[in-house]
Amino acid sequence: MVLQLYGFPTSTCTLRVALVLKEKNVPFKFHMVDLAKGEHKAPGFVAHQPFGQVPYIVRTTRDDDGLVLFESRAIARYIATKYASQGTALIPTDAKKLPFFEQAASIETSHYDPFVSGLAWELRFTTWFGGKTDEAHVKSLHAQLKNKLDAYEVILSKQKYLAGDEITLADLFHLPYGAVILADDIKIDEFSSRPNVNRWWKDISSRPSWQAIKDGLKVE
Amino acid sequence: MVVKIYGHAIAPAVKLVVQVCKEKEIPYEVVPVAVYKGEHKTPAFRQFQPFGQVPYIDDDGFILYEYRAICRYLVKKYEGQGTPGLIPNDPKSEALFEQAASIEYANFYPFALGLVTEKIIKKHRGLPADEARVDEYLKTLEAKLDAYNDILGKQAYLAGETLTLADLFHLPYAAIVIEELRCDVLKGRPNVARWWETISARPTWQAVKDTA
Image (cartoon, rainbow over all chains, first blue to last red):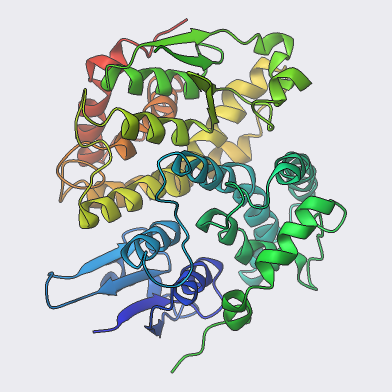
């Protein structure tokens, strides 16, 4: 049975998983979870994802009793590992390179995600739920993002990607929220002014896998 | 060879790396970095850690930063000694470990760190806490811990029936939130309380937690 992906068509974390499925040429069936109707907080959903968040996957095969997995980066790692021999190699197997992948994966979660997701929340998503933008918080997040990307600029001046000279999951993880803050309603561009960051961003964002899904997943 | 951990000994992230070294019986040395003098922000330090933060390690010339990455590296390198299974090897258990590791940094860490920043770090810098933000962090953290309580009602640890790195990742910031800030987050969450008591009672953590 084909891998089942439960999520929302334009949700950043859902797209993070879909992106990796595309890179690894793994077929999947997308099921839309109706966030507006609160489907993600319903008991049937929470039984699979106790935090009431999208996405999660279900994978059943003949040889195992099935796997339900949540947390987009964990799902991505699972796909990259399980399908290591097809599509793009996204997690190094070389014991000397693996630590740098883990370092890069941690960089994304500590030095990028809190700021870009915070900005996305304040400048787009909070208004969807009737909230108000906290301008002081936006200013603080933006300033911190600039500092962090200055460090990225140094790292990427010495190597092509965040973990070394080969692309890994860690690079791809940046795409969904990066695209949100660059979008017309937010327009925070801290990539173009930094030559190495800009080179790296253009590289990863032009990948066919991202281009195929960046505008959202189709509900069948 | 002795692993050199560059950092301030009382920093939560440094304490965790030390704790993992103890779990895996790895000889280590904490090399002090004068954070109060801003040593971690100097160009010389940033050569090793471009974000200007502690810790980084020097393992016989091999430099690595980001404390969760450091812990993963040490656990994998010394797989054959000390506490086993901190990162599982079989595919299904490994996937559930990665899920648990992601739960820690996505559903626990931001809110715990937020509380620590408002109530401790800001105080150090002579800045007032944003009480509205504190309430928000606490409320969110408590909701997240309700989910933890469900998960831990079905299994002993976050990734399954055995202890993994994902549980240990919680130690330094959970200790501050629960014991130092005395946030009453275990109340009404008996499974979380059981899990916390178990992992925080580990002798390796007891040996490190009160480093001054």
